[in-house]
Image (tube, rainbow, N blue to C red):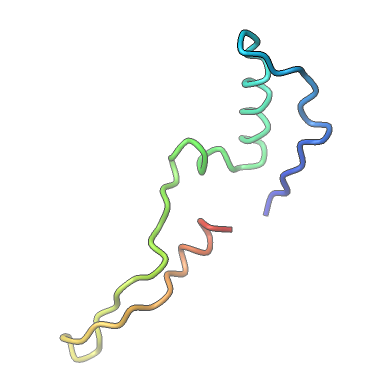
Length: 72
């Protein structure tokens, strides 16, 4: 899991007319493999899912294992 530490990664003043900070920030987010979570490529999954029972008629709500991947 990537660790988010910006302490010494981006060393530039952020101004509205200076877009170099955006380039550096996006490069850092891509390097940490988290840009897809920010730009919406990886969409949030549901916290629970409904599973059809063995008899074919009953349903059960269970935690979605994919949600932990997205949430963490």
